[in-house]
Image (cartoon, rainbow over all chains, first blue to last red; front, side, top):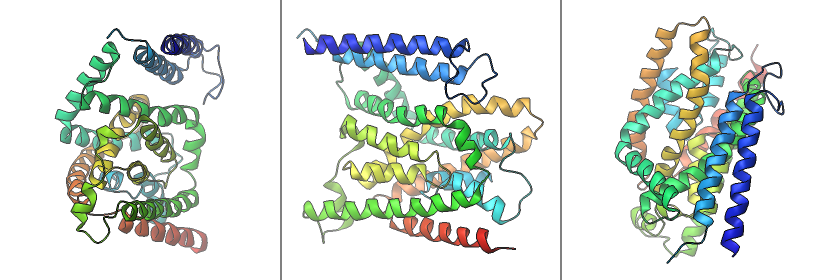
Length: 67
Length: 282
């Protein structure tokens, strides 16, 4: 049960990271960026996509397995 | 610069610190605050990363295969799968801090005194890691035995915990500061995690490749958009490759029985001497 809720939490986290990546890509989010006038922040986008992938991998590890 | 970077990147003496300090001390003509300076350094780092890829080519193939296999299966069943996941965990802290503190860190490259100060701190960090390691050796009751025998009591990179990998990753993030040696603090972190010196060096070298590759992908395109002598810079990267290859081979042999102490004392002395020279020179 604990594994299921942890996995679900990590999937939600991955979705949040993907949304943040999209917001950086389209320039909606301007937090901690080098050039606030730029309309795209691809470095931040790549970072959040990588974090989303890492969260999904962690979720796959956390889910209960059939023995 | 290529030879200097390739050698000092893998020797635990801070390549970035030397790249900031030596041109200042020797009055070389390029400016560290120039927009092409960081992409140039990253190009040199790519030369170093290529040497590491060549040395660990078989391991990297296993690690990449292990990553995808374990990620899809959701379970770790082999050493290479575990190492792949440990490297993922270890890469995250420097990745996040590198992106978010990029601007502040680039500004630090224009302050050689800051690099000298961090080099001094780097020396003490490595000496501190060795003090703690000697304490662990006393606990393991291996004092007085041959160094190679002492080292055998400690573990291999594949067997550290994920928490320890995150600790080594956090140490790697510290090395974004010019003067803090990436290999020095990650080897030090590896020693604290209970690795043998040679295994700590191997984990440090493996951990270097993804973060340097990512930095290269981001920074190198800037080189080709600015008016810089790309041919000369590529020549520098080739020299960095050769120096890194020779250095890595030497260090992996050295750490079979060697310690971080000589490098710690060197960094402390070089940092202090640079601080004095930069403060009092006319």
